[in-house]
Image (cartoon, rainbow, N blue to C red; front, side, top):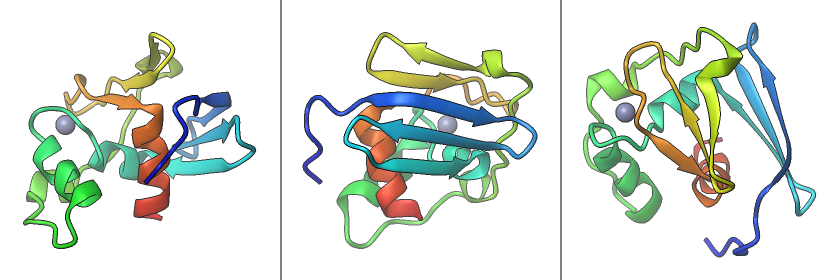
Length: 114
Ligand SMILES: [Zn+2]
């Protein structure tokens, strides 16, 4: 996974009713995520062990039921916020609010989870 250091979005489109997020990258690629996928890929301390395996190991360990069955709910567009110029942050309705999704991670997720 060798994303260029300069990878970043040219545009981010959020479809709250359809619970989808699209990122248009500066290398002309586009990634579409449903909120459930994003929530289940939450890189916060509680979910991160699974994520770490997904992106680094050939044989992932057991995924907790909480993470596997998590539903990605966002109350409003304000629940998606930029972190500096390098990441997005989501205030998931189930309380997972500390995950930082940086651009390389989101790109890798799109290529791994879909
Ligand atoms: Zn989490």
